[in-house]
Length: 136
Image (cartoon, rainbow, N blue to C red; front, side):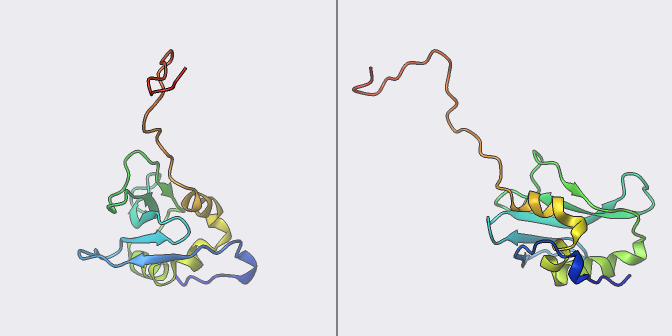
């Protein structure tokens, strides 16, 4: 399965780099979005709709590189045969920016470029009154 990028199909290029790993597995790898510093893990998993086939999934990761369980992963087009995994994943790994530039990956690009949700470190309690000096 040869992967080519049609110049007309390219919508937006985002710069990502493959993160070097100590314990790299055969197909999965981590990329870093240079615009926001977020890590994402790209790997093949069984297609949830057709378990005998595979699909490419992208997980947003914590700063330590572990997939974030609080984030829904992006599940790509399925139906890949096991024999296609090596070539497909190698092509993505060789040029993830080009793969992300494909028209079909517009929502994935937007998600990867979006900043991580920011948790409010000190949620305000209703009825709380300020206690610092000079507060009225």
